[in-house]
Length: 194
Image (cartoon, helix red, strand yellow):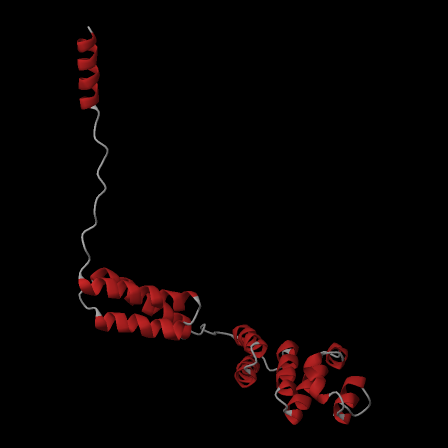
């Protein structure tokens, strides 16, 4: 009896499936390993937002490893992403509000000359817009353009007298704070708007 039980146990053991064998990856072609390393390096620069350096590294990969189609496809995609990040397309500006808002964005970025050009385009469409006049006066003041700032602020105040108090307390006009013409203009003395 023992032999029959042992025989059954032995056959039961024999019927258990073998554990799956680990698949051994095929060895990579010699250039592929180097391409993967360089791609990983380029990705690190991309993640650090050093788009110019990342783009250049991705371009090197494309030229050095023409046979690595999967890596090349990814590298080309990253090149396009880097280019878009480095050279964003400017929005299409259609009307005075578009030029005004773009000017405000540029002014906040410190691109005062470009901001002023946008405000001029906005004023060409809406010459008596007090918000555009006021913001243009502020951009001129921030640029150190005294005469243009005072003249434009004078126009903004003539459209809306509330701009007088606003300018008196606006840090954008700090450049003119000690200027007697500015002080006269924001105090509202007679002849200041002439």
